[in-house]
Image 1: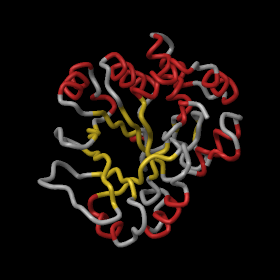
Image 2: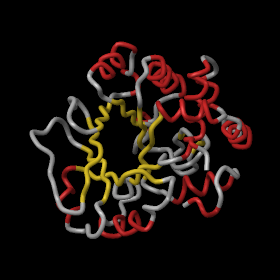
Image 3: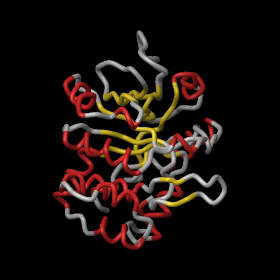
Image 4: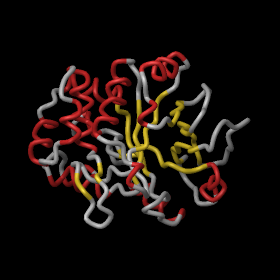
Length: 249
């Protein structure tokens, strides 16, 4: 499997619109723990006790979503917090993603995060149309992160590999393959916005398949992962374009 897809999907099954019950989500995550596609289980601080009551066996790797700075992180047997994410967070002992609105991701903000040893989190969807950044806005944020040497993750609205308009809501969704390609283009210095805007799935998939190992490692050095409330949907998208085998998940 390509380096481009290893650990790309952070399991946010308990978050909207999935809203999978905690026990069911944890069981499904444990069943997938051997998959090279799946990253940590994402849980909010408010539901940590509920998560802890569902664990058993090998420690569950968790990325904990915080509402803001906290004095101390919770602890429980069967839970290994490997990262934290949220607004206005400072440097700690763990990998930390600071959520910033896409339009506020500037070279200055990126430099401040990098100097503090922090990473960037960008929201790319939600329940309103204005929660989805435009191609130009996301392209600018990716360019700033890559130019500034900063790692980032995305969250929301990225179940499908290709940019598309949702037939029910009418919202324009970014595609995660588009983002991978746009990150590669940022490293190469051209056509970032065009890569994000392309809705031709075969063309985007072919361009992603053409990324060599050296560039793939550089892409994933920056674009770490994205949170998705469905693991099956993005994995099915990769299979649909022949980018992973049936056995990959």
